[in-house]
Length: 271
Image (cartoon, rainbow, N blue to C red; front, side, top):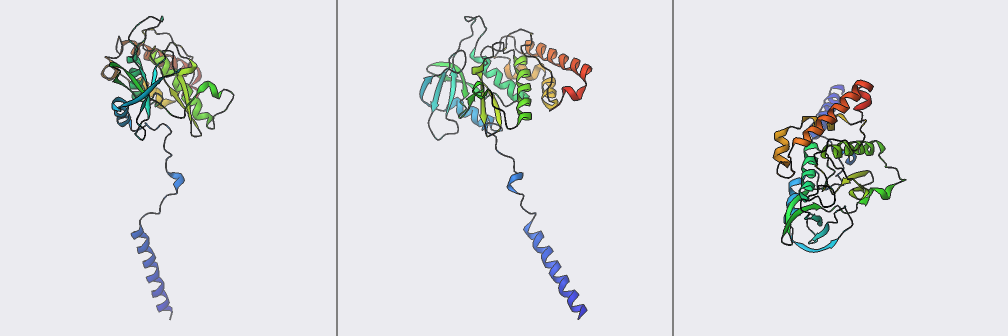
């Protein structure tokens, strides 16, 4: 009797094991899956660039976004992208600043190199018999100044974004930042969006924003940039190519190296 019982238990154990192997590993709970980014273009840059570059324009309107008053162009509903911010600002110094639509495109290319994902896809396209910069219109974003007095649900992540933004704008020499150039997407955490770099990429070496901390991954990507890489991406878009960028990069790296000596790595390269 005891032998028969052991035999039955053995068969049952083998059957259960076989069923588990056949079924494969247990499904992971939905919470473990990464949440899609509110920045829909992240990881799909080429698709969105092509959409912004080639989608037919069905209408347009003036917009208060940015100091150069670009126009909002609308694409046919139901497509990958609904519209873009369009500027055909010619290279000039009429306002006292060096301005160009090419600087907007260069800012996006630098953003991609650094893995920043704050500047929406920006490309050159033709519209109204002119060439200009078309930047993906980010729906549901609000001006950062509208959130004054509110607190981000993810304060640590938001502070990291603010530190990266300061370093980025110092790097590209955005010497005329204003509140209208910063937008925020909420999902519900806050995502900083940067627009209108038409006055960036001057030859100054002055740091516009103070820098005290930065996360190590972003700093390492900035430090690794070299002349061939930069020239390939923005060499034809800005007047002196990578020369001023690399000078400012070296200044930024030197400033953080100095801070590390004074405060230690943990205090400087925190999250």
